[in-house]
View (tube, rainbow, N blue to C red):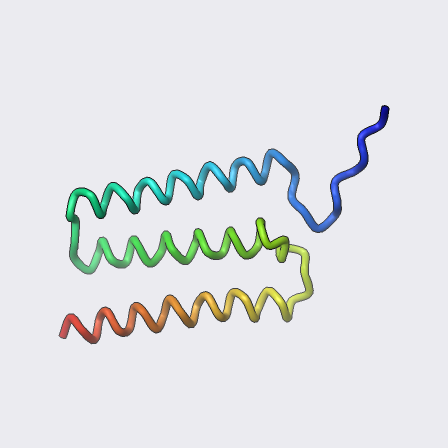
Length: 96
């Protein structure tokens, strides 16, 4: 019996698994940093970077927007960037 071709908007199962493993690893790094009580601007920048990358991967891979029209990618990634920037600005303004 022939297997149907994967839907063109979705990634291959191997890619989805790789992204999922990266997301789990990034979540574990975030958890470990919190458990150890690490702090400071460099740690916060690392956490923002991981959060942005994780959000981008979720949007592009699991919401299947990698091959979506440019407008949808710009809207969703723009929203993610705006939220991350607003939180980062609030954090750094609170530091001063």
